[in-house]
Amino acid sequence: WQRDRKRLLQIKDNSVRYYVNKDQCRCNIFLNGTLQIERVVKEDSGNYTVTVYQEDGKLKAEEDTMFIIQGERHHLRRACPFSSFSEPVPQPILSGECMNKNVSVKCEVKQ
Image (cartoon, rainbow, N blue to C red; front, top):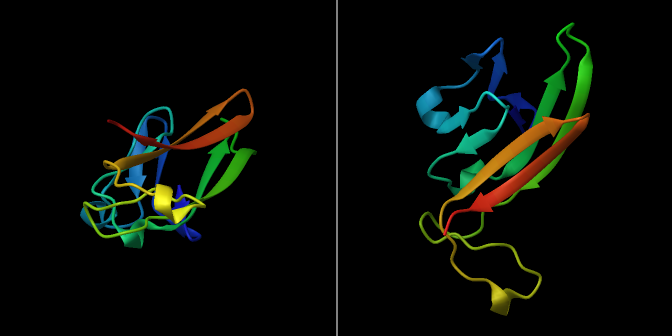
């Protein structure tokens, strides 16, 4: 995983390697490649890239997604084209998954 073309972390052979300070990153990666960001703040906004390789090291898939945090910590708002419909939401979780040559990235909010 990268944010704004800067490596954050990777998982290979069930081992996680951090390229940034783990506490500053506040991120985890699951065995399926899902990225989780804890205690999201505005500074977590950016272009996130997930890159998936085959076992032989060849590129399998790569996907970019723009992740934008609006509002202050604990007062996050979801982006909406009509500002009157924006409302506070709980802590979001950004995740990505690669299945059958398709990479999907989602932002989830647990109610």
